[in-house]
Every structure is written in structure tokens, then in C-alpha cells.
Length: 138
Image (cartoon, rainbow, N blue to C red; front, side, top):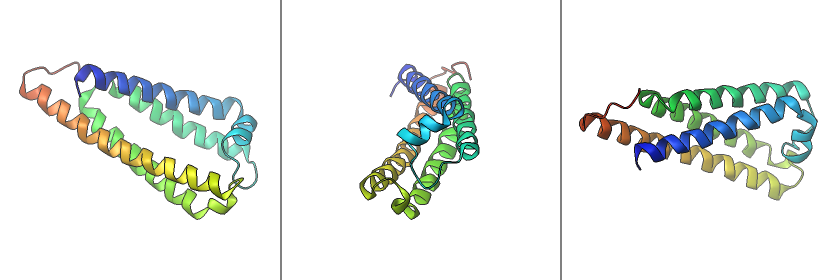
């Protein structure tokens, strides 16, 4: 993957996480009804989760121009998505259906694997750029 492609991936991921976090904060009821039907609705906890997504979105956005930040930010995201998947695994029966609970758990687990893979790619791109003398802007 090239440095340019990696920057684009980070911009897309940052935009997604920022938008998702804002959605939770602006419309917690809509978020619950469309995405998070697990147990009883709690707007405070939905807002807490929204702030987590905003923080990760901001970290991803900052890492666009800071190659040394990329792998660490992605490792933290991989750990969080993995822990989130485990939490969902225990609460599959709380979803609006078992199929939905299984799907959500699988998507979060795939997200964890994706972020771990992307962390490895990011580090390879950074080390390759450093070896070639292209320090980028970070």
C-alpha cells in the first residue's frame, strides 16, 4: 500500500468514526432504534459511546499526517473493537434477534482483525518511507 493510499484510508476511517460518534450524540434514540437494540435504551451510555467514537475519529484524523502515530492508534482500535466484540458475544441474546447479535459480534471481530492488519501495513509503509529518505510530514 502506498503512503497516499494509506492517508486516504485514514481519512475515510476518521470520517466514519467522527460521523458515527456525532450520530450517537445528536440522535441517541435513532441510534438505538436503528443500530443498538441491545437491552433497554440508555441515552447517557449511548452518549458515552459516542464520545469514544469521536476520540478515535480525532486520533485517526491526527494520524493522517503523523506516520509514527498510525500503528499505535490502530492497535488501540483493534484492542477496543476486539473487546467490544467479546462484550457482544456475551450479549447476543440481548439483540433484537440472535442473527443480529451474531452479525454484530462478527463485524466487530472483523473490525479488530482489520485494524490489527492495517497497523502492520502502516508500520511497513512508515519504515519503507524512512528507509527511502521520505519522512513525510510526521
